[in-house]
Length: 99
Image (tube, rainbow, N blue to C red; front, side, top):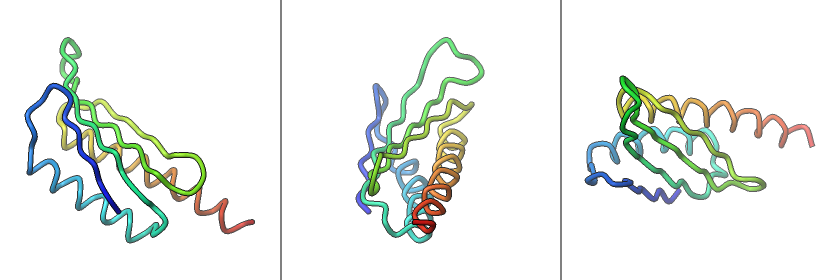
């Protein structure tokens, strides 16, 4: 799976990319039909104590899968987003198996 990282008005973080890639690799091992992931990190001012936003859009067969979280750190936001995606992909897989 190809992962494209974008940091909106932030400096690029190799560590954050590596952490996210590890989580995405686990998703890909579970759901081998994921084609691509678009990952966006952005900081929203004025939303204390939160404001660290991560959103991920997955290209999969059928409609795209999207999740976004706003947490107190990028790591927490990324973990929550990946967890949401896992839930959505699990539902999609169940639907695929019933047809």
